[in-house]
Amino acid sequence: MWITLRKWLQMAPATLRVALRRDLPRLLVVVIVLTGLRYDVPPADSRDALLSRRLSGLTFNLVNWTLGAASDKIGFELISPQDGLSDAAQVAFVRDFVRLVAETRAAEDEVTRIYLDPAIPDPEAHSVAERAMRDRLRAQLEARRGVAEAILQEQVESVLREEGFALGGQVLPPLRFRMTQLPYVLIVSRRDRIERIDQRELVTGLSVDQADRIERDTERAFDVSAFVTPIGGLGAYPTMLPETDALVFLLATATHEWVHNYLLVRLAPVATGYAEDPVARVINETTATLFERDITPRVLKRFYPDLAWPADGLASLVSDSVAQPAPFDFNREMRITRLRADELLAEGRIEEAEAYMEARRAIFVAAGYGIRRLNQAYFAFYGAYNAEPGGAPTAGRDPIGPAVQALRARSATAGDFLRAIATVRSLADVEAAAPTR
Image 1: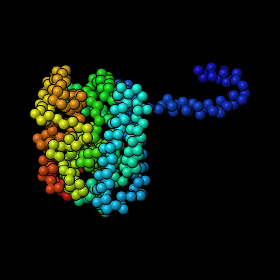
Image 2: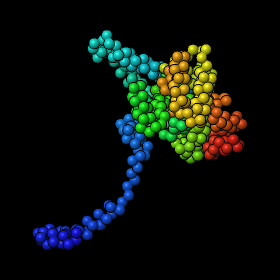
Image 3: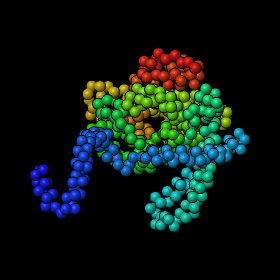
Image 4: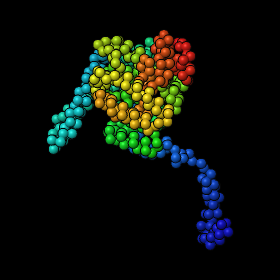
């Protein structure tokens, strides 16, 4: 090869020979360096890389959202217009804002109804007044959003401060949230047992057919169980909360998501290990649920005494939730379903377990519960929130939730409980933890 190159150089014009003699050593160095590089490319059979490819265009860009929301928050807090309002005026402002949320949603639903009605040939012309009303309400809502968020943040922080989470009067981390349209989430579980192995935030506004297609495509491609669901909040920073007229739900979710941020800032093992360790995930989510149940009633008593913490949990507070018939015991039937599914999977009867869960789903739907998909991934998602006495029905015999509840019971305050959780790494740690201030 070198002899051929010498002959070619001898035949080349003089100027070209000079250039090549000058630059050839540099070119050879570049070639050697490039051929020696090792690129960090995932192997072709990597589920993570392949799933990312399949979900291209459907994943939620959390980084961009966070940068935009944080920028807005910083700009707003330089002004802090809520500081000029009395406590009574702040409460009235929030109540008006929540009412405006309900009116805006109703106006948007009315426009949607017109566009869905096949008897209306020209929905654009037919909905001029309705769209004008919707846009006017939406503009009013956006103009008030920042103040309402700031007031609610300070109201929750007033109780967090009493629990010892402030330094120099400033709650750390500061509770900051943005009400917005929330992304969906894809939960991926093993088929042979209920265990979450992946999670992806998806774009907002997914239709039911899109969710079903993502689930089935993921299951076929990777031999897993998949479940797509909307979420009630996301512990980014600022936290993502739903735009809802359910004020109690909003306050509780803000508190819940703050717990995730607090544990992460503390570099708590149950926060840093959240993605990989299912035990850490259950401890984290159960803790956040128990903590919100401590803090939210105190916020309500102080600022909104006419509102009460519901005995049947937060689900009944969401505006679009459906009232369920009393005779059907959802918790009992769901617990039966989880326990039997666990038994079948432990025996290696995967297909039979999946058929059983689908048959049970039909029973729930017939009873008025709109469960679209009931599988391993469903239980892997909802089973992490194990804060019900005796354990959540979706958690089966998982001992982690009851252990976290026991730690809360022997903690003098909610603050002591959360600080103790920040130090634990395992179920054994939770069982042995002695909360101290």
